[in-house]
Length: 162
Image 1 (tube, rainbow, N blue to C red):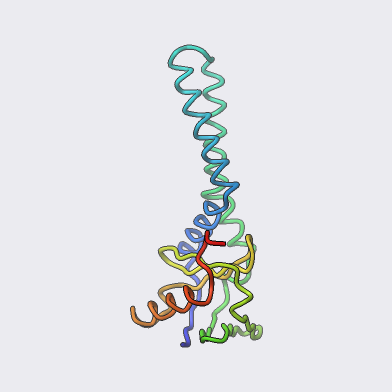
Image 2 (image 1 turned 90 degrees about the vertical axis):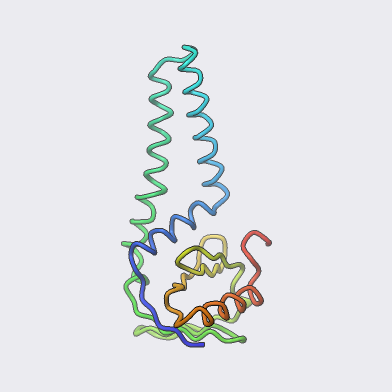
Protein backbone atom coordinates (compact mmCIF):
# COMPACT_ATOMS: atom_id res chain seq x y z
CA UNK A 1 0.00 0.00 0.00
CA UNK A 2 1.40 3.38 -0.99
CA UNK A 3 0.38 6.72 0.48
CA UNK A 4 1.63 10.27 0.07
CA UNK A 5 1.19 13.02 2.59
CA UNK A 6 2.36 16.21 4.19
CA UNK A 7 1.50 17.47 7.65
CA UNK A 8 -1.19 19.88 8.76
CA UNK A 9 0.10 22.13 11.56
CA UNK A 10 -3.03 22.01 13.75
CA UNK A 11 -3.26 18.23 13.51
CA UNK A 12 0.43 17.79 14.36
CA UNK A 13 0.11 20.08 17.39
CA UNK A 14 -2.84 17.97 18.60
CA UNK A 15 -0.85 14.76 18.02
CA UNK A 16 2.06 16.13 20.04
CA UNK A 17 -0.35 16.92 22.88
CA UNK A 18 -1.57 13.32 22.80
CA UNK A 19 2.04 12.19 22.93
CA UNK A 20 2.87 14.35 25.96
CA UNK A 21 -0.23 13.28 27.86
CA UNK A 22 0.51 9.62 27.07
CA UNK A 23 3.79 9.85 29.01
CA UNK A 24 3.31 8.48 32.54
CA UNK A 25 5.44 11.18 34.18
CA UNK A 26 3.38 13.97 32.58
CA UNK A 27 0.09 12.32 33.56
CA UNK A 28 1.32 11.88 37.14
CA UNK A 29 2.49 15.49 37.29
CA UNK A 30 -0.87 16.77 36.00
CA UNK A 31 -2.76 14.60 38.50
CA UNK A 32 -0.63 15.79 41.41
CA UNK A 33 -0.91 19.46 40.45
CA UNK A 34 -4.70 19.08 40.07
CA UNK A 35 -4.93 17.38 43.46
CA UNK A 36 -2.87 20.07 45.16
CA UNK A 37 -4.97 22.79 43.56
CA UNK A 38 -8.24 21.13 44.66
CA UNK A 39 -6.89 20.63 48.19
CA UNK A 40 -5.75 24.27 48.22
CA UNK A 41 -9.25 25.39 47.13
CA UNK A 42 -10.89 23.34 49.90
CA UNK A 43 -8.41 24.62 52.50
CA UNK A 44 -8.99 28.17 51.30
CA UNK A 45 -12.74 27.71 51.66
CA UNK A 46 -12.27 26.56 55.27
CA UNK A 47 -9.79 29.41 55.83
CA UNK A 48 -6.94 27.03 56.66
CA UNK A 49 -4.58 28.61 54.12
CA UNK A 50 -4.11 32.10 52.81
CA UNK A 51 -5.38 33.23 49.41
CA UNK A 52 -1.72 33.54 48.37
CA UNK A 53 -1.19 29.76 48.73
CA UNK A 54 -4.26 29.09 46.59
CA UNK A 55 -3.04 31.62 44.04
CA UNK A 56 0.34 29.88 43.99
CA UNK A 57 -1.18 26.43 43.27
CA UNK A 58 -3.52 27.89 40.66
CA UNK A 59 -0.63 29.67 38.95
CA UNK A 60 1.41 26.46 39.00
CA UNK A 61 -1.50 24.58 37.42
CA UNK A 62 -1.96 27.21 34.72
CA UNK A 63 1.78 27.33 33.94
CA UNK A 64 1.95 23.53 33.63
CA UNK A 65 -1.08 23.40 31.35
CA UNK A 66 0.27 26.25 29.23
CA UNK A 67 3.62 24.49 28.89
CA UNK A 68 2.17 21.10 27.96
CA UNK A 69 -0.75 22.34 25.87
CA UNK A 70 0.85 25.23 23.98
CA UNK A 71 4.57 25.82 24.46
CA UNK A 72 6.00 22.28 24.08
CA UNK A 73 3.99 21.24 20.99
CA UNK A 74 4.56 24.55 19.21
CA UNK A 75 8.29 24.61 19.93
CA UNK A 76 8.74 21.03 18.70
CA UNK A 77 6.72 21.76 15.56
CA UNK A 78 8.83 24.83 14.78
CA UNK A 79 12.15 23.03 15.37
CA UNK A 80 11.42 19.83 13.43
CA UNK A 81 12.05 20.11 9.70
CA UNK A 82 10.21 16.81 9.26
CA UNK A 83 6.83 18.51 9.45
CA UNK A 84 7.64 20.66 6.41
CA UNK A 85 8.44 17.73 4.07
CA UNK A 86 6.27 15.85 1.61
CA UNK A 87 6.34 12.07 1.99
CA UNK A 88 5.64 8.96 -0.04
CA UNK A 89 5.32 5.87 2.13
CA UNK A 90 5.05 2.23 1.22
CA UNK A 91 3.51 0.02 3.91
CA UNK A 92 3.87 -3.69 3.31
CA UNK A 93 4.04 -6.88 5.41
CA UNK A 94 7.85 -6.84 5.50
CA UNK A 95 8.67 -3.20 6.21
CA UNK A 96 7.80 0.45 5.90
CA UNK A 97 9.67 2.50 3.30
CA UNK A 98 9.60 6.28 3.55
CA UNK A 99 10.69 8.51 0.65
CA UNK A 100 11.29 12.25 0.75
CA UNK A 101 13.24 14.66 -1.43
CA UNK A 102 16.12 14.19 1.02
CA UNK A 103 16.30 10.42 0.69
CA UNK A 104 14.79 7.05 1.56
CA UNK A 105 14.38 5.40 4.95
CA UNK A 106 13.54 1.73 5.41
CA UNK A 107 12.12 0.48 8.72
CA UNK A 108 11.60 -3.24 9.37
CA UNK A 109 8.63 -3.88 11.67
CA UNK A 110 10.95 -4.97 14.49
CA UNK A 111 12.23 -1.41 14.67
CA UNK A 112 8.92 -0.23 16.19
CA UNK A 113 8.19 -0.78 19.85
CA UNK A 114 4.50 0.21 19.87
CA UNK A 115 1.85 2.20 18.07
CA UNK A 116 -0.86 4.53 19.22
CA UNK A 117 -3.92 5.61 17.28
CA UNK A 118 -5.29 9.12 17.81
CA UNK A 119 -8.03 10.99 15.94
CA UNK A 120 -5.74 12.26 13.14
CA UNK A 121 -2.67 9.98 13.21
CA UNK A 122 -1.06 6.64 13.76
CA UNK A 123 1.95 7.19 16.06
CA UNK A 124 4.60 4.57 15.31
CA UNK A 125 7.02 4.56 18.26
CA UNK A 126 10.67 3.59 17.94
CA UNK A 127 11.19 4.00 21.69
CA UNK A 128 9.52 5.85 24.55
CA UNK A 129 10.26 9.31 23.16
CA UNK A 130 10.76 9.03 19.40
CA UNK A 131 8.00 8.27 16.95
CA UNK A 132 6.78 8.87 13.43
CA UNK A 133 3.32 10.22 12.60
CA UNK A 134 1.26 8.79 9.76
CA UNK A 135 -1.79 10.96 8.98
CA UNK A 136 -5.04 9.05 8.65
CA UNK A 137 -6.24 11.39 5.92
CA UNK A 138 -3.37 10.17 3.70
CA UNK A 139 -5.29 6.97 3.03
CA UNK A 140 -7.52 6.99 -0.05
CA UNK A 141 -10.52 5.38 1.63
CA UNK A 142 -11.79 3.70 4.77
CA UNK A 143 -10.79 0.25 3.48
CA UNK A 144 -7.15 1.31 3.05
CA UNK A 145 -7.18 2.94 6.50
CA UNK A 146 -8.60 -0.23 8.05
CA UNK A 147 -6.04 -2.38 6.22
CA UNK A 148 -3.20 -0.25 7.60
CA UNK A 149 -4.71 -0.37 11.10
CA UNK A 150 -4.89 -4.16 10.97
CA UNK A 151 -1.31 -4.40 9.72
CA UNK A 152 -0.10 -2.14 12.54
CA UNK A 153 -2.00 -4.22 15.11
CA UNK A 154 -0.52 -7.41 13.71
CA UNK A 155 3.07 -6.20 13.32
CA UNK A 156 3.48 -3.76 16.24
CA UNK A 157 2.37 -4.30 19.85
CA UNK A 158 -0.42 -1.98 21.01
CA UNK A 159 0.58 0.96 23.22
CA UNK A 160 0.55 0.03 26.86
CA UNK A 161 0.92 -3.70 26.32
CA UNK A 162 4.71 -3.63 26.48
